[in-house]
Image (cartoon, rainbow, N blue to C red):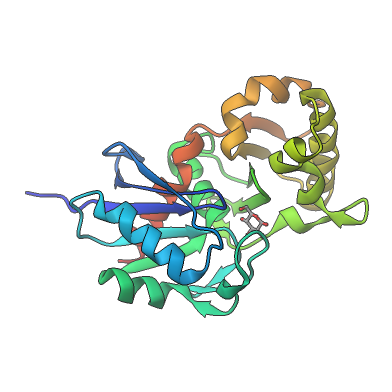
Length: 249
Ligand code: BGC
């Protein structure tokens, strides 16, 4: 019997990467393929790049795609760090047509969160769990007893009169040339804010920077919520996108 694999694509500000996913193991079943995100990242240019990524594999099944903004019913609603051409677009319809296969689109942090809760650092955890991804922006995925509350957008909470992600994302660390200890102070201030508002029992730190968690997690203050690194690292978005596509049927 052949088991249909589902393909996952993670669309980010700098790269678009994808791979077929082994849904049982929650892992890539082949090495992922990555192309640079076209600039400007207009919907047409991104669709062409996604086609290239999928075309690299002999895969014809359904595909799940992440998007770094709010996605409701397959429509992309915001585009804080991507081309404004996405705002108000039926992205899911666009991908279905262009790729000629079932497609499911969801927020990037939500996808990473789904993967971490099922296969990673949040496995088997009930209660309120918050997955935060630190990259170009700050993404958030909020879970209550394993159920996702989609599109929480906690990177845009206000901190010192600004969008929190402008101060505490890993792009902000690079932009302001902050040392790890300097950046950790900002991350702590941000975690204080989310802890005050949501009282999570567990905070999972994901995004590209989670690879280097030993550089900053030990610098963070003790807090009520446990703070742990994501386990699926950079593959979480791809795996979660495929999970969402499989769940959509
Ligand atoms: C966007 C979120 C996204 C996050 C991480 C934010 O700027 O508003 O939707 O999840 O960046 O990419």
